[in-house]
Length: 155
Image (cartoon, rainbow, N blue to C red; front, side):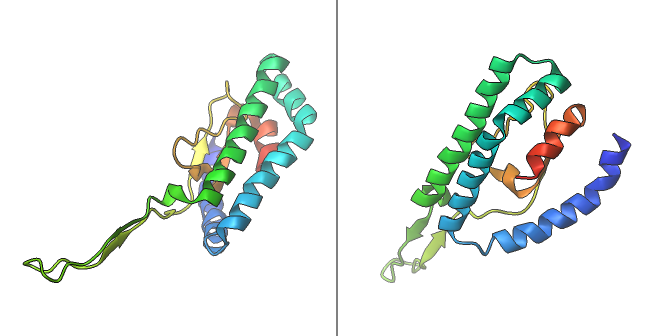
């Protein structure tokens, strides 16, 4: 674990550089990026599932199901990026006749930067994104499943 902790500054520095580049990428290309990751996971499904099985002793059907859930989430988030509602954009138009005058106010959600996710060993492929898929900005590492984590980070 100390090797992992000592690697955090370099990992975060690399993630920050990647985030700065990625933040200039169009929504369409971001969606393609997530779809490509899902496709690569599917292409390497057998090898990933066998490696995770060796590291976790979880049954193959469970691991195959987890791969399906993960690739499904990636595709779902790719569609959400294309559709655009995730930014929750709000435009509140000005009203000069109101006292005091109401200014033009606009807001939207924007990514803040990279994160590191230390995953649970009982879900070696899971990226629990909830409403945001922030984990794509960082490197998911699970010390209990080093081979699986290192294989997945290459997507």
